[in-house]
Image (tube, rainbow over all chains, first blue to last red; front, side, top):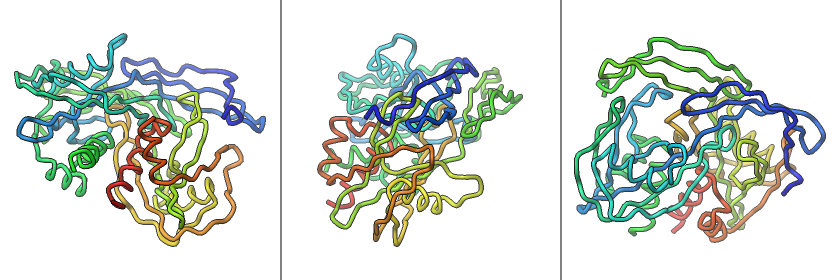
Length: 178
Length: 178
């Protein structure tokens, strides 16, 4: 579909952060017009569907500064430079929840906000969970909540779960355990 | 869960764009340490699940500069300042696809990237579609593809659909039409 392509004429670097980079590209549109595109570059992330041996979904509650509130999500985190996503998944699961998985299976991946960011999330399903101690980063504060799939469904319905990847995970479990 | 709260000590404005604003907040963590948070402020968006009278899901193909490629999504777009999300949904559906809906029902909303952005998407289901002409913005280039739910499922499976909100929409249809 190259007929829709937007050719980059110029790139203005706006910000280089620890998590994101921001740039404004000037592009040539298919009709010859010029336009600006505001772009956020993100290293990508993983998220983990972890169901315990007694059939509970492992959720973590944490404060999300962009939202100025605490929300409930499946364990997730950014990919470190050069890190294999499956290693990120194992690391974040252990750090945030204490669980280790005998197996981590890639369920899918998806772009979260293709209109302005290139973030991709790799979604894993953890199998064969065993529990140790959580090892949060020094500056990471999370609280674990384990819920039945039915409870998770009601959390999606009443938007206690209000995060796309977590709602996705709950629907995935509904479709694959029915 | 105020015990996890991160108190803002300072805000540095980095960028004010047409779509996003970027800022870096210095925060005080629950353990007393200070940290930085890189934040993208977004006006929010809508997305529309539109199924035609012959049971096809309406998708749009468009070039997404952040990804440097063309992807397949449900119709979607940013909320204009002061605009009611349901109006955005009707507007974007008409602009991108030409369809008008007798009714637009809010299915849910979700945060797309709570780690770094406050974007929220309001997801609507369009009912009673009638077809007119698409009215894309002058600088918007989209191509419509209408697919059966079964085809959409296979697109999610093989990642022809590789966008969270669209994969969400397909799972929603699977769960609600079964």
